Amino acid sequence: MRNLELVEIDSVSGANATGGIVMGVAGAHASGVVGLGVGMVIGGPVGGIAGYAAGVALGGLIAVGYSLATAKK
Image (cartoon, rainbow, N blue to C red; front, side, top):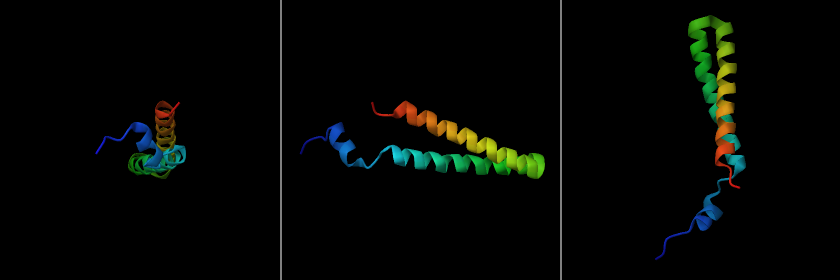
């Protein structure tokens, strides 16, 4: 039995840019939901909308930054 090389693992892992984008969108939505909850408690409906927008923006920026930082060259 031998150890697998990184190239062999990458060829069957199924991880690709599309999966990263989908997970990024899911993370952005989750951040938005948290922002919505916090905004509703602090600022009412307007705060909820602003909190959701800020959460989605922050989650999206984090996902894009992570994708760019870990992109295979």
